[in-house]
Length: 184
Image 1: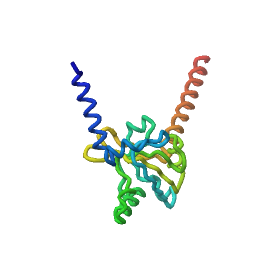
Image 2 (image 1 turned 45 degrees about the vertical axis):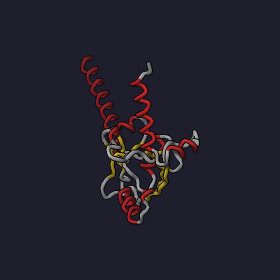
Image 3 (image 1 turned 90 degrees about the vertical axis):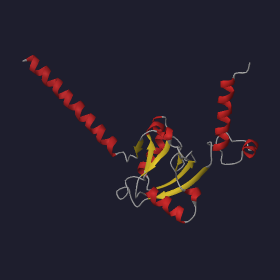
Image 4 (image 1 turned 30 degrees about the horizontal axis):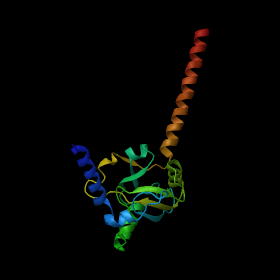
C-alpha cells in the first residue's frame, strides 16, 4: 500500500514551490539554477546617507531569528529612514521591482558576502551597493522571521565592551583588596 501521508506532504511541498515561484512552473523547470547564485529573484539598490552622524541607521529591521542563523532578512523598516525614503521614491516612479520588502534577504554589501563583513560595511559606509534576494512577502510571508532586531551602528557593542572591561578591573581591584586585608 502506498504511503499516503508522505505522498500528501510531497504534493503539498510541490504546490507551495509552484505557488511561490515568480515564473510559470514549466519555465522554472527548464532554466537550470546556477550553483553560485542565491535562490529567488535578486535585485540591487544603492543607498547613500549624508553622514553617519546625520543618519546613524539605514532603516533596516532584521529578523533576530535569521540574524542568529547568520543571515540578514528584513522584517521591518524604520519610519523616516534612508530605506523608507528610497522605497517611497521607487513607488512614486513606478519602479516596484526595486522596493525593498519584508522577507527580502540581503546577500551582498559593497562586494562583501559574509555576515560579519556585511555588518561592518553597513555600520561604517555612507554609500552602499546592496544585493537582495526577493523573499516571501505575501499574506503571512514574514511569519517565521521572529522578533525584529534594530540595526546597530556598533556604539552599543562598544559600550558593552567598555562596561565589561570596567567590571573586570573593579573585580581585580576587589580581589587585590581582599588579599591585602587578609594579610593584615
